[in-house]
Image (cartoon, rainbow, N blue to C red; front, side, top):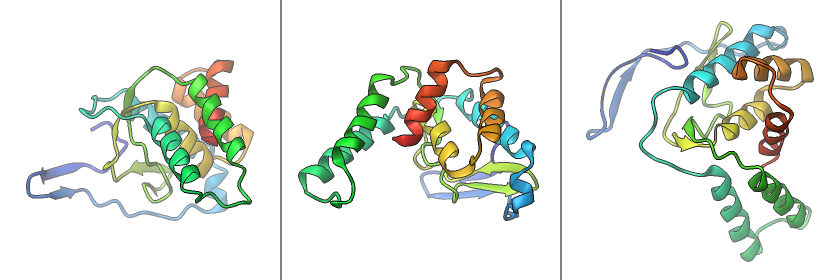
Length: 178
């Protein structure tokens, strides 16, 4: 109903089925990627999710990343070309600045979970959705979809409905790294 995903027509979680609107996805061209409207639409869609109805489950993706990193380190599964200490410092910095705000979040906004039809993004596959830090979603979109400072500014200004504070911008950058 808020315009960020396909319309849901019917579902039964006990039986495990869902009927929803079919959105014919299009691949974004380089010309499409230069269109400012895509970045405004992404910012608006995330704001709609993050200000929407709460999810029953509360999770902490940053804590999950930290625990996974520690497990991989203990099991000696981090490749030697990757510096564990640098990764640990990135996580520690993000934890230090961790937002205490919880919001409805998608938590898996990789390119398989945002489809475009025209210049409108549709967010799908909410199996990991929970109450969590919205900056994780922002950082994920920043990594996968935003490749220049101008479009990053458009995206963030639209999301916040204002220019983000320096602290918000730095935390967004921390979450992109995390």
